[in-house]
Image 1 (tube, helix red, strand yellow):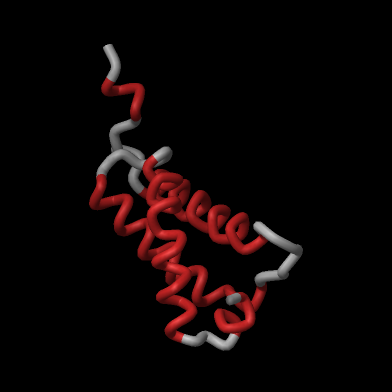
Image 2 (cartoon, rainbow, N blue to C red):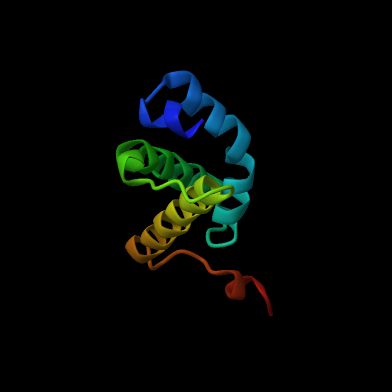
Length: 94
């Protein structure tokens, strides 16, 4: 799959999305509460993956998952920094 992603093959990107989008949404939701914001961050994350796939280095099983997860976490943190008025989980607890 990695070689197909590096060639920017559309079917490979659809496969990546299909396989990993659910898990990545969960990772994102650990940082961001609002579902619409999670969707936006995921979309931005996949755009970032597409743009920077050339910098990906295959280091064995799990390296692709680690790389895309790191992108989602980074994009989630960027979103939080851009929107400091977002509710945090601690605000919901009394």
